[in-house]
Length: 451
Length: 156
Image (cartoon, rainbow over all chains, first blue to last red; front, side, top):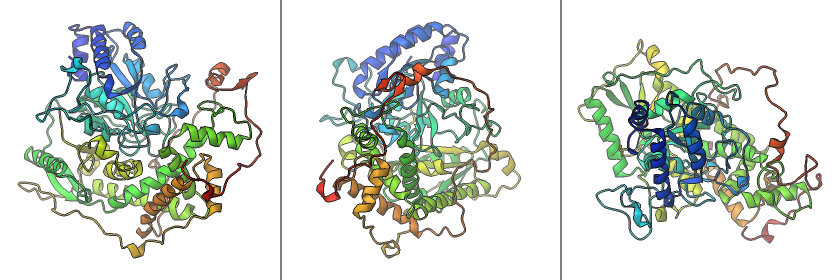
């Protein structure tokens, strides 16, 4: 039952072939048994039981279990962003997208693990420990033989495991292991698509402005979008339809230009023009990914689509642009964490506000966060503002214009890899620092965030 | 379960308008990527020299950031971030306007000037570690952060 798609399970519930309570029980059993993967920071099984009792069979999501990344505010449930800074933070309100899911009848399985403040691409930089990819994972607990996702080569040995991708790794693992049927993530530079690809599920980054960011603890306001992780594209479309649309609490939401289309049951790609950006054939692209890319292009061409090479000339500069814009906006967004109104407050420091703030923030943030704040403030200094921040914004325009031109020339869909390589083992991934890995793994995903 | 690492970027709201002015693409029998990556090598001479960070700049950034990161490791990290950012100087952006938001051409709605929520003092105060008589509590302000010279500190 747990390997069915959301739509299939919804159909079973609505036709009373299974009950939402039985489904929840199975999901909770599964979540308990794969706890080793560390997908959840906070499990809310008791709450889920109370919610499933209230969700009538006629509601849109009829008691389907979902998970939410821990940077979405959830009323009376701790929301930590994977950080010590918000270890003690319990929001008094729900994020809009969470509210829309719960009002539609979904039940909350828990808050999922993530890189601290969504800064990272491996979900290994969380205060609560790294998230482990279920593929080829060797469980310590002997009761897990029925749930190991088998592959021909068998589980890894020697205690190593594959990274889940990030920063929404917990959400991806939650969906991939069947503990829920859909999860919310966030996507600033690929944080939904990256873990979805590593865990073998679907990750959707909706267009900026189609989903409300109210309640999403911000990383980079001009790039953040709530993301959707599901087993199938159909499920992602179903959830998108429920949570998209204007929100009075987020003035950047637009609904007039939002057109959600329905596809036929057997959609045809005849006549669809698919562009392959040649700059995405980047140094470091691994053989397996490259072959997969070619295979899909050929499969689509065989099915009647027209595939051709296109150019996005400024692709190679987009990761540098992203690093500057991210650092600058982070420096601004993280300024709210002073430990006074909420969050971690250093003990025993009464010398001055500045000293207290510095100590609280030093204790609350990890090195990755502190490093980005530091760099961001450097780029925003008066003497550097034009050279870095404004230059990055101008290059952003060039990148956005690249996409506009390609779509204007008749391309309907761009087909690209998600990451340079397949999921790396943790031992290899952790050999380089967070910034280096972000520069590699976010390479393909962040240009469209900026456009 | 699909195991391909692929991503589709769809702009469905532009499909109809482009039906009228679509170019014809050549369709091949079997698509093949170019063998070599398309990459422009950046000439190291075109890049600015490595930035030298003086003590006063570090202390200024620390005062702005308040993260207690003005140690050797923090400065090395900053230098590496600056070096990475310096690669953008080879891009010609003359005559371009900065792009602050992807919604620069959208008309975003303004909220009505109506009070929708309030009377939530307890909710607002409950997450603060220190509260006294319904006030947030801080040590005295207007005292500059005491900072050591860079080379006095090692590690974090």
